[in-house]
Image 1 (tube, rainbow, N blue to C red):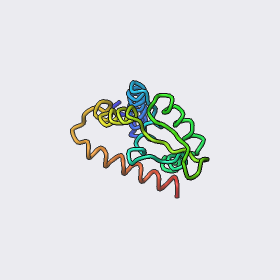
Image 2 (cartoon, helix red, strand yellow; image 1 turned 60 degrees about the vertical axis):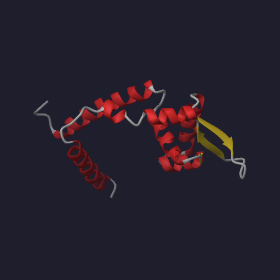
Image 3 (tube, rainbow, N blue to C red; image 1 turned 90 degrees about the vertical axis):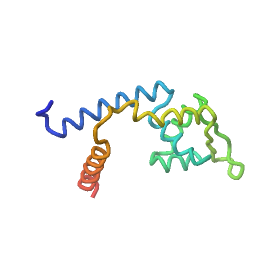
Length: 136
């Protein structure tokens, strides 16, 4: 591995971390999309449309995520009293606990590194430069 190109190292590391991340979320009854929705609900109730906009996904995609979270008891939906066509999504006590359990996820999933801030800075730089070239 020491002689692998950087791209292969990044790709392999990303796959390994993603597998560990997904397994840790599944152990909590969550998906990555569900964790993102619970995160946005940290600020309080939102409409399902607002959740989709914040997560940068289609309403239909957020609808499936919200349905899974509701089945798990992590959120509740109710009709907006002002506009009954809209759904207000609220995190439940179980959702609060699920969200809180994700706060230590990084330290559980990622191996401890000597200089984590330097690694993060390098990754951010790679992402910025790659995004600039890809999405001009």
